[in-house]
Image 1 (cartoon, rainbow, N blue to C red):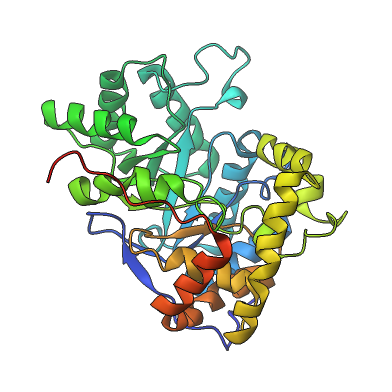
Image 2 (image 1 turned 45 degrees about the vertical axis):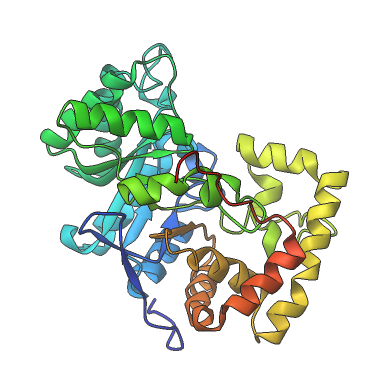
Length: 351
C-alpha cells in the first residue's frame, strides 16, 4: 500500500528541548493493536495502518507494556520486521507501569521501582524485537516509589542504551517539577516530554497547569486522545455504532466513557461538538480534522498521537495539517466561544 497522493507533506517538530524530530502526527497502539490481547484490530489491519502511516511520513509510533497485555508491542515489532524499516528512520516509544503480562505474580510487575523499570523495559524490548526504544515513559506516577529511585532508574536505562529519552504520562505539574529538581540535584537527565490527554474538551492541565514547565524546562507534549475516543468527530452524538472500537473495547477508559453516554454531561458535550460543525463547514473541512488541527495549533505539542483501525483514518488525520494555516486567532476565538472552557491564565505569585 502506498501513501495517498493527495496528502499534505508531513511536518516534523522538535521533541521539547531535544534535537530529536518527530512527526507532528503519530500513531499509537492504545485500544486497537494486538487483537490476541484484546485489541480491536487484527495483525493484518495493524500492518496496513502502520505502513500507511510510515509511507505518509509518520516516523513516531507509540505503545505501552500494558496495551493489550503486551500484544500491542509484539505486533508493532512484527510490523517493523516485516517491512524491514531502518532503525534510524523511525522513533518508537513505550510506557512502563502496568506489566502484569510480564510474569505470573503481579507483585513487582507494576509501578516504577528500579526493579520493574529495568525488567519491564527488557520485557518490552523483547516483545518489540528491538535493542532500544527512543522514548520511554512513566505510564502514570507511582506514589509508592521515591522520586529519586524513579529518576535514577530511568537514567540507568539511558546509560545502558535501552532508551534515549524519558518522560511522563498524566503526571501533575508538581510531580514533574520534583523529578526535574531531583535530576538537576543529582546531575542526571530529567523528563523531556509528557503524554497527557488533550483535546477540545480536556484542556486545563495542558493549557494552565503545565504552563510554567514549558517556560522553565521546554517540556514537549505528545498528547493522546486528540479526538477524545472519537467523540469530537460527532459520530457518537446520537448512539454508539456497534462495530466501532468505542463499542467493543474492554479498555477501562473506554468503559468509563461508555457509562457516561447519554448522561447530562455527555449531552452537554455533544451539544458543544454539534455546535462546532458550522465552523468546520466554513473552513471546508470535517469535525475530525478541525479537532486534530486544533490540538496541533498548540505550540507546545510536539506530536499528537492518534489511533486508527483503517488506513483511511490515518490519511484523514494527516490531512488536518492542511488546515493549520486557516486556524487563525479569529477562528480559535470562535471555537473558544463555542466550547466555553478555555482555562483562565495561570496566576503568578511574583512579578
